[in-house]
Length: 389
Ligand SMILES: Cc1cc2nc3c(=O)[nH]c(=O)nc-3n(C[C@H](O)[C@H](O)[C@H](O)COP(=O)(O)OP(=O)(O)OC[C@H]3O[C@@H](n4cnc5c(N)ncnc54)[C@H](O)[C@@H]3O)c2cc1C
Image 1 (cartoon, rainbow, N blue to C red):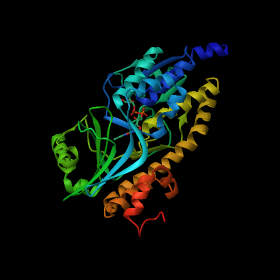
Image 2: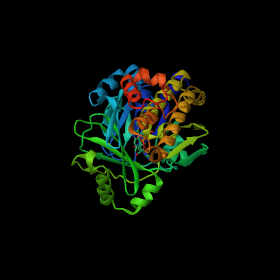
Image 3: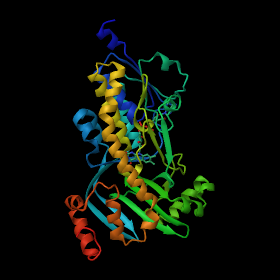
Image 4: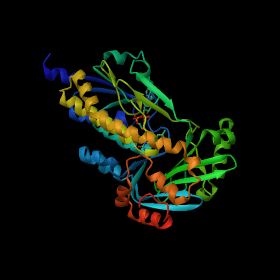
């Protein structure tokens, strides 16, 4: 078979139509139009988990550079703001120079699905993949983009480790429209809570509530019904919700699983996105990372002329160093959140400082450059103790 015929017959099975699977399929179809891609997705179209997701500053730059048409469509649906607000002891501290954008997760998927359809990518919704699916054996390349509970990962030897963070969280939405990304810290008789909130449409915000294990147990959240849990969280954050309610999207209390894999591919099967590794939501990078995996994998395939084994090797070589760096930032951020109840003894300014430097990547000088108003206000508020002097 000639090289061209081999390329034309290239059969790809993509499991999961999340951001990783859809972007991979779109890019792949654009660079090899005659390839045969099937995406299988367990959910119906228009039905996903969660609410909105946030992207930090330059997170979408790679989409702008590589797929400008997708970027242009996405920007029409983005909510953008340039401040982070940290609320502690009723004091709201603004951190300038922090650009973020938010989008409904469903809207992001709709945009990617439409682009895929325009390229004739076949997406089989309502179709749950299981390990014995015959498509698996027929494919030249299998892409496991099936998220946290990946079947591809579970049914092969990727050397997977899963470590559960001790904090508990639940992903709600609310009609309270927040001006900026706000981290709201509150205490009650059971312990300490934080809400990660941001608007992702002109009418809705994400409202993710997190607490430590001791608070979770003291509040009795494990045995509450959905309605009781909502009512409880509405009481904790009554001031911040200002009369708005919390809404559930099959929302349940969970502990975040930190998933990593020793091997990124086994034979002709490769993992991308959350199936490969999970990035803690506190650094707002999981979706971007998943989409970047898709881009790196497509590039590696094109570079290796769609010969699978060298392409997968190249994918790991090129992608792993950057991804590992991000994971170390995520770990530091998780560590900070696991201690946030103790850290709440700090005054609001010192608390905000501690938050801003939690990843270990932002020095005082770097923070001064990025957020001069915050650093000046912090220095004025904590003249004898601050570590910037
Ligand atoms: C609470 C929370 C908040 C978050 N907030 C943010 C944020 O603000 N910003 C951000 O960038 N990221 C955020 N993330 C992370 C982000 O949601 C994920 O990193 C991202 O969705 C990963 O994309 P993915 O395509 O790899 O997986 P997913 O988006 O999980 O997609 C996987 C797809 O595979 C499908 N699937 C699974 N199993 C099967 C099967 N057996 N057969 C067929 N289909 C299957 C699923 O239905 C799903 O559609 C957050 C995550 C959580 C949990």
